[in-house]
Every structure is written in structure tokens, then in C-alpha cells.
Length: 372
Image (cartoon, rainbow, N blue to C red; front, side, top):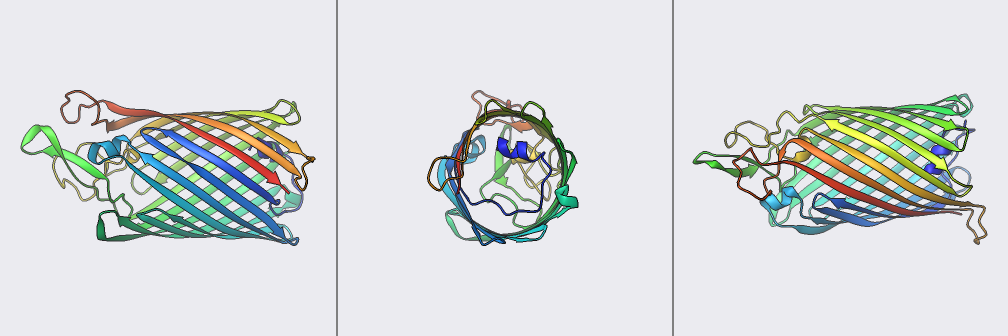
């Protein structure tokens, strides 16, 4: 939220627990043949001066008619529900967090346990955060009762936040993720040239490696401007053992119109290379050990333009409510794929000569936060 962006550039005091609040969010994604929407409710409550409890309920309702689905299957509708329970413990200048998340779909079950420690130094001028998460997933396939696979995930995080001056903040974050097990979509297929007809192609199941390690490092800078505004810049580099290298550049601006109204906007650019075992069209069936045609593993680039408005009312006259915040945020996304072709495009095309795929999407987020 914009209020958080503005407050981050002010030197902090001693470590503190999250404030008691209720956060209600509605999100909607519409683009590329996918519509995903649903609510999220987060509740936090302090139990004494050192302990804070939290619980979150999150829903994704998915209606899918994307290019991947239309090429090999029929549109579908499904729902994902997610529950998270967490506890924060404050000890002097340290905050320790422990939590558990369960995410459930009709053919996928994911469980994650996470732990993190945040330690402040030099009167709150420096903050170091270390985190670890362990996840285990169960993968099913509708229509095949005997299909059952597993995947294990481990996430390691290290972050440093440093107040440079009273108006500026610099942060660096490092994240390493290791995945092992069944890492592909059980429904997805790749295509290859029909050996009996050069004008046609056939499909076969995808096969991914059973291990993956990814490393991401991000640096961000925030600067508080003298006229109740802030500007931030961020760069993130991602690399994994599948051969993907990705770069993200983002620039954002927050401007306070009045004591209660704030406007914000940002622009983000993303680019990545393709996985080593990706191809839009393989020369023949089983032409290599690992085969993928997931467009998210292809070479692509994307731009996101975001804007939003935030209304904040402190010391409200509402009984029991210390602060109220309402926000409406809109993101417009555009993605262009360099080597993924739209096989559903109208017209007669030879295999590998179909139009390259691209799509736009609109993301809407409306939230209400009540601090009590």
C-alpha cells in the first residue's frame, strides 16, 4: 500500500509486532483466456506485548480457456482455497515468525511450513531477515484415479534493509529455491512433426527434469520526496538450472493528494530466456529426454503498467477502529512470446509457421483494511 511505501523511508525505532487489523481483499485477473478471481480475508490479533496471531483465507475461482487449454482440451472451471495460520513473537529487537499454509484444488494439494527471523541493528537503521520454508505437494490427475505424484520444495531467504538517510532506504534480498519430484503439469502436452505428414503435427506428454534450483537476487531503493511523495526503483535477476535467465526492472511513484487520499503508479518490464528443454515444435516424437512446450518456459517479455488510489482515515470516529484504509489498484499487463506459436489462430498454417502468441490482461484489486 502507498502508506507503507511512505513510512518505510522513515528511520525506525525498536522492532514491533504487526498491528491488530482485518484486511479484506477482492482480486480479479482477466486475460489470455483466463479469468481468476476471489476474496481474501486476513485477521491479525496481538496476544499480550510479545505475541501476534494471524489467519488468512484466500480463494481463486478459475475459468480457463487459454491457448494451452484450447489446443489440447476443453475449457474448464475449478476453485483453489488456501488457509494460512501464523504467529509472530517479539523479543527485544527481533521478530520471529512461524506459519503453515494449505492450498487445495480438486487435483492438487500443497502444504508449506515457514519460519523467519528479523533482527534490527543500530537503533532500527539496519534490518536483517532470514527465512526458510518447506513445502510438500500431492499431484493428482482428474479421470485417472491411479495417478499420484509428489513434489518437495525448499525456500531459503536472506534480506538486508538499510536506512541510508532520513529520506532514503536501500534493500537487498536473496532467495534460493530447490524443487524435487514431479514438477510438470500432468495435463500439458508438447507437439512434434507428424512423420507421415509434413503439414501436420502430433502431441505427446511433457517430461520435465525431477530437480530444479533457482536463485533470485533483488535490490530496491526508496526515496522520500519533500512534497509528501516517494519514488522507488527495483531490479531483480533470476536464474535456474533449467537454463532460464530473467530480468525485472520496476519504477514506482506515490503521491499524496490530501491527508487522506494518495495516488500511485508504476511501470515494470520483464524479460526471460527459454528453458534448455523447451521447444514450440519438436522434430519428432521423444526427440530428447526432457520435453516442454509450456509457454512460461519459453523466451518472452512483458510490460506492466499499474495505477491506483488509496483512501486512509486515521483516528476514525468509528467505534473500536483506529485506522481505515481503502484501496483500488489496477494493473495492465502485456506479454509477447518469442518462440511460442498460437496453434488456435484461424487460418491454414504449416507447423512452426503459426503466428507468435501474445496477450493482454487486466488485474483488479480492491481492499479494505481496518486497524483496531
